[in-house]
Amino acid sequence: MSAQELYLRPANATEARGPFPPEQLADLARAGEVTPETLVYDTTREGWVALAERPDLLALAFPPRQRLTLKPRPAPAPASPPPTEAAPAEAAAPGPAPAPAVPPVAEITEILAQSSRTAEAEEARLVRGATVGRRGALAGLLLAAGSGLAPLAGGALPASPVAALLAHPGLLLVPVDLVLAALLATGATGPYPFLRFRAAFGLGYAGLLLQQADAAGAGGAMAVGAAGLFACTLCYRPLASGAAAVAAVLGYGFTAWLQLPA
Image (cartoon, rainbow, N blue to C red; front, side, top):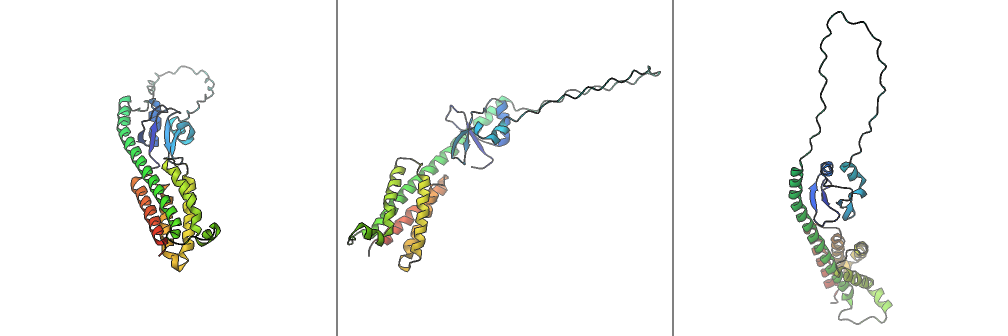
């Protein structure tokens, strides 16, 4: 969403309206369409917040009025003798300044009706993009867990868990991946900060694998998967979240295939 676009909706409604330029907030407030309780979509918090929680936008919608000060009245001039000639006619006093033009209510209503459809379409695209990113992260986590278990497939198991972890450090991430995948499967996005930390840890582990000649391919694939996993939590546009999901799935899928014993 552009920094110059605002999406609004009343606190007791679910239908969003927008986009609006910030300069139009004052017109909407004068028409009674915007109040301090009106919700505005905050891209930083990734959610709706009251306009009163955004002092910068609140000042645009309800600008402070200038304080009027009274000038001291000058002392009356001393009386002068009447002029011998006829005084010239006094200049006509200037009329009141014209009031600033305010868009009519019908025009504002038409603007809101037109922008409502745009806001609904934009919100639907954001929801689709977030869903694609969440599902891509879920699939990537399951494949990442599979890549951690792949070295044990079809071979002799180590004598003890400690020996297994020393031989295959990727096993440490398997329970973390499965827990995060279970949380994402419920539709929750709260674990995203932990998912980003896990993806960053995966990038570090991939760097260690890249330094080993016999594991460079798996390290490169893991780096692609971890980067896609991280991007799945940040992208909300369908195209960007789809690309991140593909990177997560292909990266960790190829890693699991390379980790299988020969």
